Length: 292
Image 1: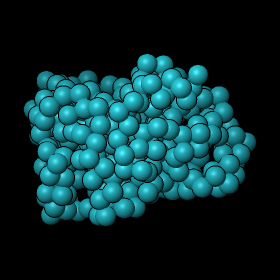
Image 2: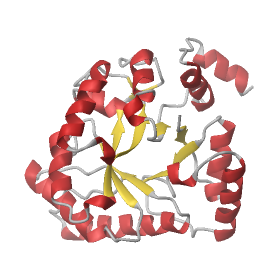
Image 3: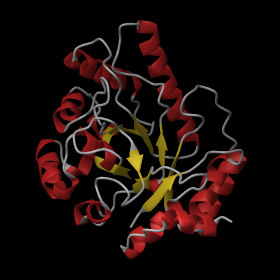
């Protein structure tokens, strides 16, 4: 299984991210190139990048499975203020060039918020923005499935299909599924195979390049988007294991975005749960013991 989690992009940049992933027992990871809430970015250090390549090769992490996530401040859906929309396009393109320097192949983005616009106009704006951003030699953009909080776009198969239908270079755009977001948007993860069948018919499973694996603190259809640790939410451990081990998604990287438990990252123990297919009801206690 290709399994990892969100990790920090610290002073050691990609090398630090890889070291953290290895400490969790992961063989991939996802990172931001800076704080997701602002535009402050440091130059990519090629020496640290080369060290990261060697470290990853030594520790069984294939660079082609590593994922980057775009900052949350990007909104491609709303064009009421042209300057703001153009800023989102420009900043996302800069982020793509940054990860290209590190030979990372995928950038996950939240499609955007319609705000006061109607849905169809917002979806058109997302596609127009992607057509402005995409270049043949830049990494692939992955549209994340969203929970439907507020005026989020990309909340169902129809909206994703509508965006993709308007993208000129379709080979440069894929999909990232998020189990919490799917649950909160109204999808029953206990019937995940039914969802995959519909997705395959409407879009095609070959367009799925990443899966964010999270439990949810809220019931199906709540449109809340609050992640929970594996087995500690309304989706349930067994349903998430079925997603993780689904043979149709065998070669797709799975990324944990579950919340820290107090001051401790849960990913090492959650990855152990996944590998052993066994729920740990003592996660908080075991984490305190692990990090004491």
